[in-house]
Length: 120
Image (cartoon, rainbow, N blue to C red; front, side, top):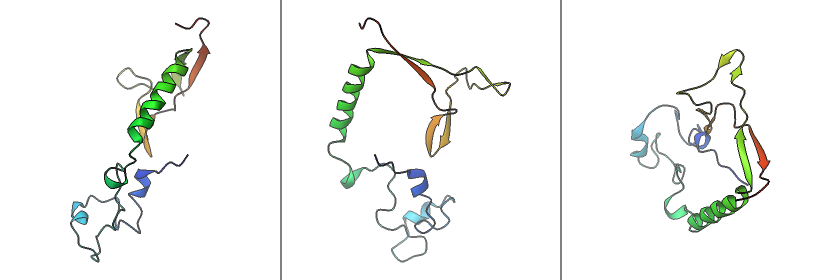
């Protein structure tokens, strides 16, 4: 599997001078100007002519396979309520998001998976 980290790609200093600065004018710059973004360097969603035409079907198939597999299991979150003496919750939720390349639960998502004795 190949995972492109969009957050890192959009901050390459060789493609985006002063990459962490908010500079919307860089997308209006003409080719050859110092702020110009090279063709195909900005790829936030992989839409348009480079989008996979089979993406919708592949996602639907993946969801069907997951449902058919997971219906035989029970999944429980296995968080400890206290870490380092501090309760880590936001708005009453233990799995709040943090940004580490992409949004993820703060301490990962520890879980216990138990096979159901009688599938329904």
